[in-house]
Length: 302
Ligand code: PSU
Ligand code: MN
Image 1 (cartoon, helix red, strand yellow):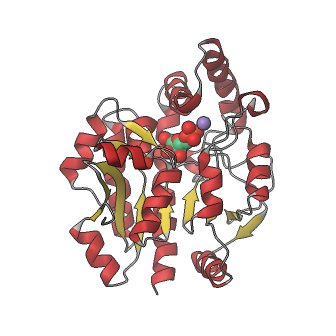
Image 2 (image 1 turned 135 degrees about the horizontal axis):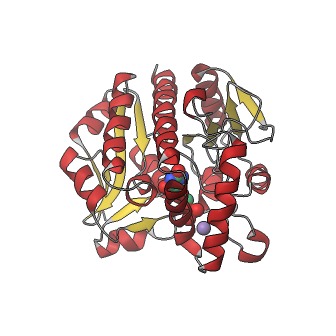
């Protein structure tokens, strides 16, 4: 059985020529942002990757195939589609076998990027250990994926809707290098600061690429989490976002939101409660991560 993987012409050509490529996820489009900002942002992120000298490969599952590199019309259709499945490691094979439409989370995008031969992936924030995980057991499969699949993931840390100290603990247990870019602190998505020191710090794309290569040389499975702080001019300070997060979490608990629905629910409520400011920050940080991802991919290709 052939691998159900279809590369766009552009991505296939870049792979053959060993040019830098940055994978991009699709759950952020279908579940992370409202239409039409989701499609606009996805286009701008692709343009940012190109401007930085790399080829973007947005990943999704369509008609029984993993697609790496979407046509503009496909991106638009995905951004408007209703009821798209949110795919993690557990759901990927069923979605492909059924031929249904699926958006890839960080975990599933890492798997697909690796199958395609892409080493760098840029997104907004990773999933992590949810608050109250000691009773709900809600820990994102993104964390274990980082320990198994050799892709460097550029994210703005993990959202403060999560339990960040527990998220860092699980990453440490799983042997995932958590590397803050250019600062000592682990960034908290909308805010540059989390109050937590990052386990590791590197200050250049070249140093991150060297660490990525060394991990492969040692035969260590798994990737790296590159925690890239949101640009200062776009951040929502921690003191401003924390009460909003608390309110959204209370609503989620009161409404009994659980499982896969938790992250999209919280993002939507925080968007509403900040009157869109959280979305503006989210867009700025994804663009920033796309630039760093392209720089790392260029170092790996060079
Ligand atoms: N962070 C965002 N927007 C998102 C997500 C994370 O800013 O849409 C998505 C990513 O696809 C991530 C997923 O992999 O949420 C995590 O979901 P869960 O917590 O259910 O594992
Ligand atoms: Mn979960």
